[in-house]
Image (cartoon, rainbow, N blue to C red; front, side, top):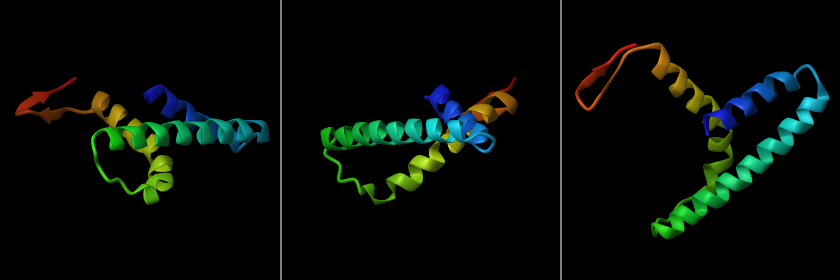
Length: 88
């Protein structure tokens, strides 16, 4: 998951300089959004949850930034989880 989100963000940076990368980014991003939507929809159906997918495109665009921020933050600063302090 982290590698896919990192590749999407890397392609976003490369797309600024080259239109070939922009098309690659578009294909990968649309493919990722479709696959994630199908998985979320199936999981919500299995768990018998009513899920509004109205905000999904917006959240799907923001999620790569959020997930990489969490991963990089976990490696760069101490954190507390279940009353335990973790440091690097």
